[in-house]
Image 1: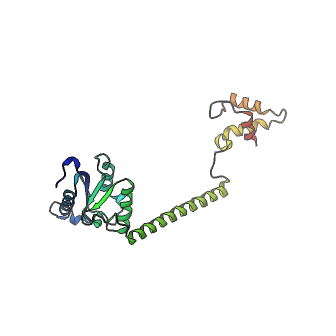
Image 2: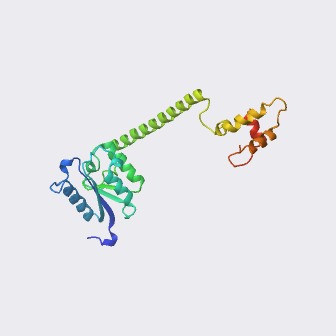
Image 3: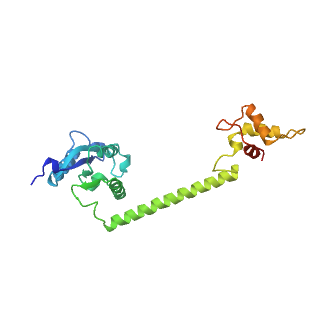
Amino acid sequence: MTKSLKSLIKAVGYTRQSSAANVGADKDSETRQRTAITAHARAHGYEIVGWYGDAAVSGADPITDRPGFSDMLTRLIANGAKTVIVESPDRFARDLMVQLTGHDLLKAQGITLIPASAPDFFTEDTPTAVLVRQVLGAIAQFDKATTVAKLAAARKRKREADGKCEGRKSIGEREPKAVARAKELASVRKQKPSLRSIAATLAAEDFLSSTGQPFTAKTIASMLA
């Protein structure tokens, strides 16, 4: 029995042509894919509320690099659909790793992916699928560890070269002119000025802190250290 329109599950259809030779009104690739998707939707209680596709896109290209697929992702929430129907797994992606990573991306967004030719393809945890996910996870972990190690090595080289890499800038780095003037005032031999008098002189010469206030005696001491 056919479901009423109100009870139909909203879905979108996605098509992909792998080469420019398959694109065009006189080609049957997109027509064939739409026919298969529409037939599956009608037979299983889905309402196709939008069509998206990528023309001349390789099945090995990551889904995030496909303009049509990216456009579909940004609009899925807007039209209320949480299901994507494709003709077959290889129309979604021909490369197994791209298939699985693409599916996992959609799943993380709460989106169901259904190939009309094999509806359970992405829901079955086959040994091959599990192995590939484990390998991809290990690669991602290795890449992260490698990046962390590279950044640590870069920070070490910078510390060795400049004496400092991270952390808050010193008063000398933030206020080099004020520090130079404070040291000049402190070098007076006849009457060594106090920290407060140096701060007052700096304020009179418009050397102020970042808050617009005169430097404190403690800050002056840091300048002279």
